[in-house]
Image (cartoon, rainbow, N blue to C red; front, side, top):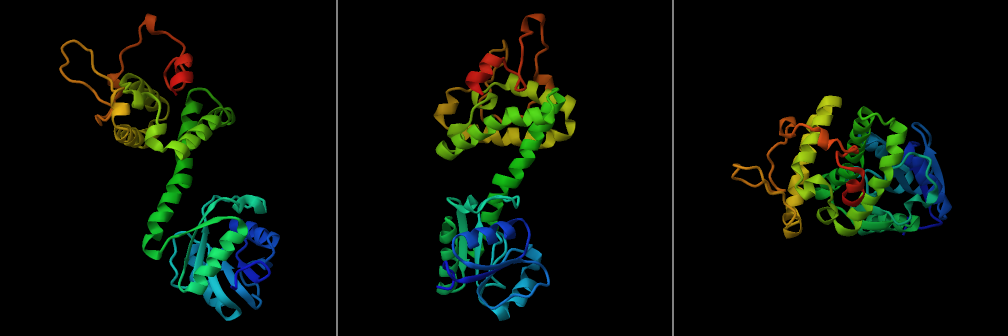
Length: 300
């Protein structure tokens, strides 16, 4: 197999992933050339592994083909039209990670031939990653899933940081305070799935708190309302997917003369007008989520 420790690999591309990958491959026993920058000569090797932007894969593959028995890329979204195989490490990289960063992560692999697929599998396993197959027909969907879990998640976290700023919490302090909550939420999701991990006012059917939160965002960060409203709507759908466990916590309207109940799955948009005016007797200390500190510790 041309992709096993002791064999030669040219890592083409000196970006964030290229540098980390070259160090990691060298660390597990490959003979590594690179990471090679644009225009640098590619020596004769068993494998040329392209760590270049998707738009540059075609030209990089043509340049590498005369010098390598097999050519592969590390793109999650691009097919195999120009290469023999692909290995996509399912991780985010800054460029400063140690070689051990690949151990235990997933790696999507595909090959045009049995030899090429074996090469992709060998590279992933040598790095300590856990390979799984993704064919060209499903590559865009797979990569979209990865982008939602990483890139789009950062947009949500940035929105949380902005709203905390409007509540008077500096960015650094907000990140430090919210990070443990984010980590535990991710751990709960990984262990139990989203529906069972869901907590908070929407899961409880507490539309008054949801409306207060939305009103605070409308006042301090109105540009975030479209994304917040979309997330609220999707969270209501998620709460409905939890079945009887969540339905038993559905909020029932107790307003005299109002002949309907509001269940968790009700997707009626919540507006600031839904919030009851605060009276002196309601003046309890509140957190960012709009509930009392003791309640948030037990119900967040």
